[in-house]
Image 1 (cartoon, one colour):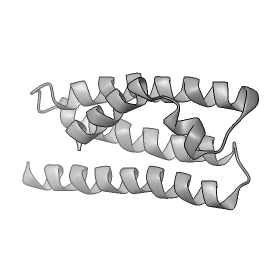
Image 2: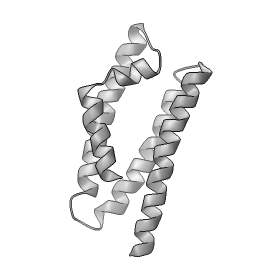
Image 3: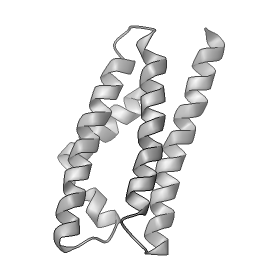
Image 4: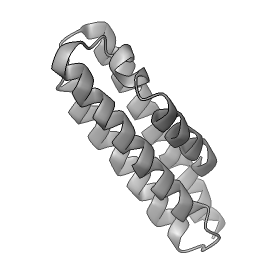
Length: 112
């Protein structure tokens, strides 16, 4: 999951327009969402770096940060649109990633 998150971080930095495009944003909202995408890219690369650092104690913390980030992204982005289709995409993506990371974290903790 950390490697996939790192890949998303690179994608978000390389193509930040994916977020405003997915949210059908225009005007100043588009600029705001471009900034969010860039921030998400930096954040996700930092969290993934911690998870992949080889330090076993950092991996669970990084996973918890990733889950918290996905949940906060969900709330933040849902508040930025009233379009039900866009809201469904936001909820699916953010809650899906949070769930996958929670399952991976639980699995890792059971193995320890």
